[in-house]
Length: 73
Image (cartoon, rainbow, N blue to C red; front, side, top):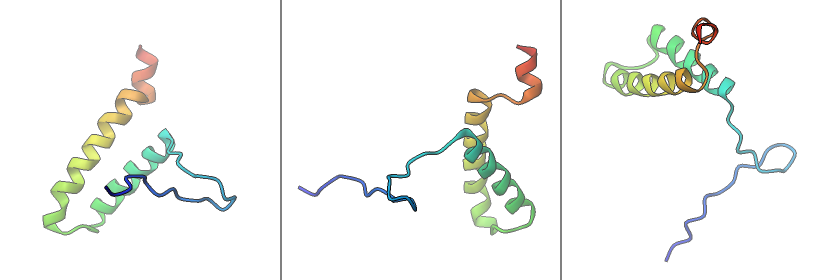
C-alpha cells in the first residue's frame, strides 16, 4: 500500500511550518476580493472563486466576528 504521509513544508529555519492564522485567512479574503474586482478570474472561474470566498468569509465570521458585531455581544 502507498505511504499516505503528507510531505511537510520546511521554513527558512528548517522547522515544519504548518501554521495558518485567522489573520492569514483575513488577508486571503481581501486578496480574493481585490482580484475579483480587478477581473483576475475568467467567467468560468468566478463561481468557484466566489463559493470559496463565501466559505472563508462564513468561517471568519463564525470564529472572529467583525468588530461591530463583537461589541454588540
